Image (cartoon, rainbow, N blue to C red; front, side, top):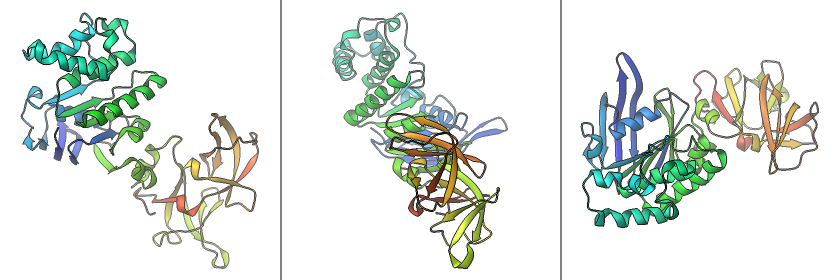
Length: 360
């Protein structure tokens, strides 16, 4: 196992810089997920850690050793790819044994490791099969077995589940997390799927445009996003937003957010920085909005209803923006009906509209 330290890491292709001064410390045995939209630089950053991309600047330390100039095979890492990268003409056993054979290890040395990995990954009944006879999930397990047998200090996973169907993704998420809990190796995992990030990570690194937006534990980022990007990226359905201007309510009755269409959202509590005239963006997650019968903070006309069984999603417009309200009750609301909403003060997020930074 090994701690990983990235200090001022950047990547440049000619005059174009795609990764900008990344500073990140990953503890020994930690499971860290790099998440962000396509093109944000997360896979490029991982490939620099792996030695598959040259580092344009900064320092990479793996296990206390500067790794910038080390060849990939000298870094004691194992990488699991999106495409499995299995040899189609080799059996499952031979695919897993390929690395040890190339390193000229004796079969008496690596055979027990292969047997242990096969048992751990439920591959015992498939060792004689060719990859074409396996399902997608089984092929990904073979790729993981090949990585495990190497006994690396660092595991790298580059979007390993994106080729699987939804049910298999859920199953493989659980298996990868369980594998980490057994082996306790350091893991860097890249994905664009924020559900994978939330359910698997010890810490999440949210990236955008080659920069780190926020680092933290999953629920810390979910409950206290540092800016509008993180708030909008994490969560499914995503956070609801409304832009407006802070205005004083009549007779000293607090403040409200006045929207572009002239409607207002009453704020039960606002930070001192949200003074009258400030341009702010309000955010609230769908599951935190309450449907009420008394005098409302705001109204929404329901346009679409999505019953999922466990939850019901109500979609409508507020201030020109589409909002989602999630309720665990079996809703009797019909499209076209107006519902009264309350936005609890403890669940409201306010962001500076121009900078995107969080106010509260």
